[in-house]
Image (cartoon, rainbow, N blue to C red; front, side, top):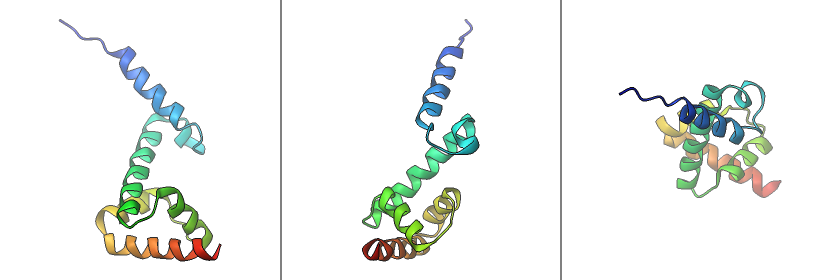
Length: 99
């Protein structure tokens, strides 16, 4: 028996894109780009929480510090180089206090 799952696949894509409605550029319109950005944000959030900070405050602190690193690179650093990520968290924390 053949299984047709077009409805379910379309629903998954639609809900992902609805959640990505605030993203800029292709990340709000293309499923694959939106899906990967969600994954990057989850990884950054998990690593930030391990260092005692939330994702929102971490990104806010990095912007205050003038650090312009995209979420793909931050996710890679969080996964492969925890020491460097901790340095970024400390930098973000320091700039949040002064802001």
